[in-house]
Image (cartoon, rainbow, N blue to C red):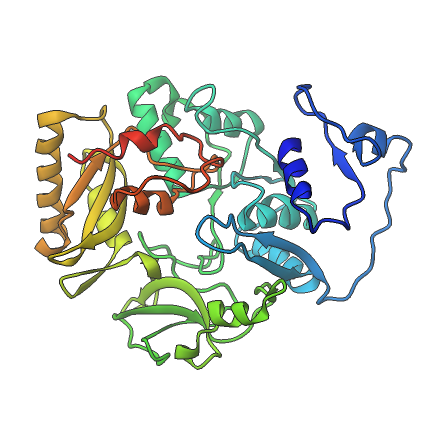
Length: 422
């Protein structure tokens, strides 16, 4: 990390930085700038065990979280001290039902907002016992998560569905790492937040995130911001402010308004960025995919999540990710990246399985949803916390060279494999 810090400071505009604290993690060589850099162990030596907090107002900025900047100018979203912490505590208590004897584990990258909330702020604010994990779920083998749960008696587990699917696939290829070989009886809750079932309160329905967290006024609207009837798809919005909402984009309030409160919706609806629908009878919410992941094939609008779900329902498929690419005939073509439960097929076998999967999707959804391209890989490009990096898949689908930052990828070598179409 120190070379990156040095390079960033050298660019300029960082004159306010007077001291850089360096933590000795691996013992490798490290360039220390005299008069600026100090070792962590030296900084904390002789410090008292108790530190009086700095008391601030509820709207005082708590932190700025920047996007990677790979798709445009980085934006630093600003959260407030009171509202954000309140919501972090409430979701810990209500969504995860945290109790004094629980062991809580969120596997997200601590640098993402999920990691901020459910590794740092939420568990610590509740005084919870938690696990902080550094590494990847497949080292030294794909049983790492299950082994950790078994060893530390984890009772509440918060991870990405993609991570679970990929680990189950790995367990089928290496049976000794399959979750069935571990004692996972300590687990009592798997969870997520915002639109979320409450333990012991909300009946679950497969594929649905059920109903919003108390205080979240979620709704589905059309392109003009008007409510759509239950059973029809639209844009997921939040109609009223809630405690943990982003307060602004640091230094660029106009971008904040444009990004999150679009003029098309009257400037007073928070746009979540997802397409969704509500069940015609129960009103339960189902997320259809990111707005920018809604495909328009020959005038037919489809969510990528719908096609992915159809692919994963095939007995051969462990994981799937779907993106669009430009097409002269249909306007947009469907490109599917697929990980099978067996080893990656090539040549004629790949063509045979691709044809079978196209027909499967056609049967499940309709002929218009058949992927034009199907690419097989041993895995999908993911961050170390298991999040699929779809922006890279879009570039691959378009035949573009990968120029974005891939430093957070767990498996950068997989990109070359996924360039090949079946």
